[in-house]
Amino acid sequence: MTPQQQLELDSRPALHEFPISPREPHRNKSAPKFTYHAESLASAAVDSPRTVRLALAGCGVVGSGLVRLLYESAPAIAARFGVRFDLTSVLVRDVNRERNLPLEARLFTNNLDAFLSHDADVVIEAVGGDEPARTIASDALRRGKKVITANKDLLASHGDSLSALASENRAGLDFGAAVGGSAPVISTLRDLVGASAPLSVRGILNGTSNYVISLLERGVRLEAALASARECGLAEADCSRDLDGRDAAAKLAIIAWITYGIRPAGLHIRRTPLVPGLERLVRIAATDGARVRLIAECTQLPGHRVAAAVEPVIVTSQSAFGRTTLEENRVEVDLGWPSPLSVSGPGAGGRPTAAALLSDLLRVSPPPNDRGAGATRFFSVADPREHRWLVAARIDSASLTRAVAAIGLHSERFIGDRPNAAVITAPVTWNSAQRLIAALELLNAAPCVARYEPAKKAEVLQ
Image 1: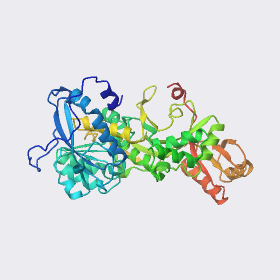
Image 2 (image 1 turned 120 degrees about the vertical axis):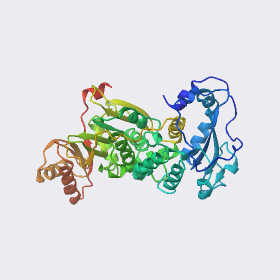
Image 3 (image 1 turned 90 degrees about the vertical axis):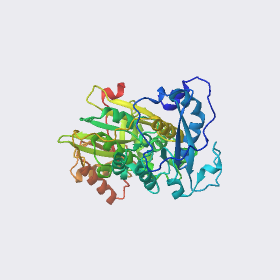
Image 4 (image 1 turned 180 degrees about the vertical axis):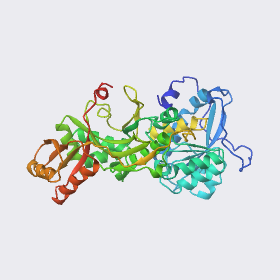
């Protein structure tokens, strides 16, 4: 259940209008602003909600979505959690832009220094990218404030140093919204991980690419699918990071950090883009009764090693991932149980991410971003395992057969013929699959590749 759904269950009458309260008396800016509370927010007195002042950096799709959610949910938040959020500063590029938000114009600023010096209890970073996001987060943590971010790129590059900064200054760093949108991936992993670690964590982590693939499966052309994603607010003008796997790889780096303690910047990820070739893969998979999904995966190997990959995977249409469509995200955690633990929910768009930010905002205990000193130490390695691969090319099946035989690969079967022939290889390493791809490129056959996974029985039954 999402935070928004939880709030909608509360039918108590509204207690007040949304935030713009007078400033509180001056406080010592050098003192830590974020202190941990043992009691739940729900224990606070409903008739006198505690005020928490917020500074919001960025008011685009996600930031404005959070503002609207706070406005709509203010009475329920006060009644259910005993807290009142007061937005007191909003950093934007253009202060004159019309945003149609329930905020006074005086709250907006485009002056970074003024925003950094603003006295607030919690700083929400929603600008994205590296800078000024890193400066905003670092400055707030040094001053003992709680920082909340959905910025997977910032965390993938600097998450461990920001977490250390939070510990040094008795501050808080929360980023549950950075992975999975409304699917509580990070909070689930934090609750599960202790001295041991899951056997694997794998899932669909990019709602935009999944939405596009779902439309392709319905016969929509790629450009039209991308246009639809933009119109729905699920994709930016440049969605190359969604289609080439960089977005999912950044999220996977955060998952590996929380799950296995591997520094985000130190995770070796095999990344295979969806394009070009996505439309061909979708058509070929359909003829085989299967679907294409962009799967991100971390797998524990013997010797405390971890292999990671983000790549197109062919799954059966009845598998759990095959039934995950449109902007839905799904993550499965293999703990050695008969079936994996799974979480799912919308993973793209402003409102799902805003709901995840609100969940982080309502958390009062420090998030366990560190696995602890006694936890097993894991190491990132290139994936040495063998997999089946579906390799497609603009070539006839006879030529593809010769190319496969020429480099000594064994094939399980061939699919189709000119202009789009494909082969499913016997289990081989990624290096062997690359040799076939290179040979087909020399023939100007425009090869594309996906991992091929016949469904396991337990997977279909979920």
